[in-house]
Structure formats: C-alpha cells, structure tokens
Image (cartoon, rainbow, N blue to C red; front, side, top):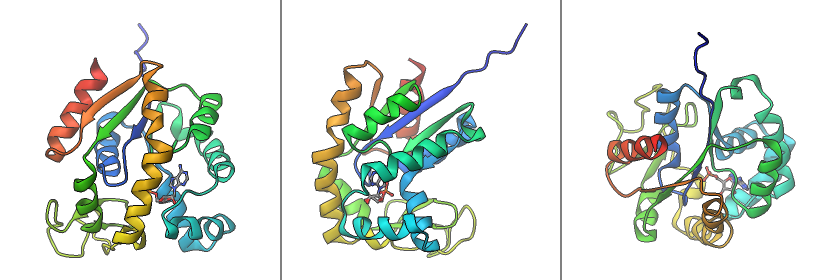
Length: 216
Ligand code: AMP
C-alpha cells in the first residue's frame, strides 16, 4: 500500500500585522512545508544591495507595493524550487488581483486562509512589533515580548524595529492593503477555498482555528 502524500498549497491573506508571519512559522512546524514570505525575500535583497533590492527599497519605504512584474517573476522562480514539491505557505503573496491571476498560471491552491483583524488593532500591533532579520520570527513589545529584550527567542539574533513599521508608513501600508489586497478575499471566496479566521485572539487559539478550518 502506498503512503498517502498530501500536498498543501496555502496562501495566507490578511492585512500587515494580522499575524501571517507568526502563523506561517507554526504551520511550517506542523505540516513540514516551507514558508515563502515575499517581504522577507525583498528585505534580504535590500540588505544585500542586489538589483531587486534597489528596485524594491523605494516602494517598501513608502508603504506601497513593489511592481507586479518584479514580484511575479520572483515567485515564478521560487515556486519551481524542490522544497515546494510537498506544498508551501505563501505569506504576503499574492497582494493584487494581477498577482493572484498570475499565481493561477503557476500552481493550484488548496486553501486561502484569511486572518481578519480590526484596523485599530493592526496599527498598535505594527508599531510595537519587533522582528528577527535572521530567522523571520516576530514579537511584540507588549503582547508577545521576547524572553530577553532585543534578542530572538528562536535563534538569538538581534531583534529590530522594521523601518516600515513606523506610524506614517504603516498607515500607507494599511491603505494599500484595503485598496489592492482586500478584494482578493472575494476573488478566492468565489472559488470556495477561503478559510476565514478571527485573528485578534491569542496566537495559539488563532492557530488552532486555522488548523481546524483547514481540516474541514
Ligand atoms: P511584508 O513583510 O509582507 O509586510 O512586506 C513588506 C513590504 O514588501 C510591503 O509593504 C511591500 O512594499 C513589499 N511586498 C511584499 N510582498 C509584496 C507583494 N506580493 N507585492 C508587492 N509588494 C510586496
């Protein structure tokens, strides 16, 4: 009898600060599939000063989106890599209708998890967020502090306050989300693959709701 192999191709939708990165890390542990965070890939490119990074930097610092063709080309290459064979968790992609349509030409999805958090909570979460550039873990100075201030619990890396997590840029990012990304909830809703989860509860509770939703 052959072993059943379940391929899990997931998208995490949700505004900046909804908890996509945090939940993605927990899904990686549970399902053994990679997290693909376009934001993390772009931040690394900015740090390395590559042509992609130089192009992306100005859009990221303004709280806008990196052009679709750049992002779609980047994801086309990433999804071809071997580690994606058992599936993947897309965190931060797609963010526009053009990206969602392009993704349809690249792969099939099993589910789209929409993490819903009220806007006023998002603002507080993002401005208090601390991120680990080495492993991508995220903390919050009040809601989810690291054990040692400024040090990542997972890898001992130095935590940073992301440059685009200041109040002005956060407001632009939330506007960008509302105008460009939120319509994707209906786009995928029409395909019947959306799992809606309230994202303003405790991290573990949100995770349990995601896993339960995916099982349905
Ligand atoms: P994130 O870490 O997901 O909040 O992404 C940080 C920034 O990277 C965003 O504000 C955008 O400027 C850029 N970015 C990330 N993912 C995408 C995407 N799919 N399309 C366009 N820009 C993106």
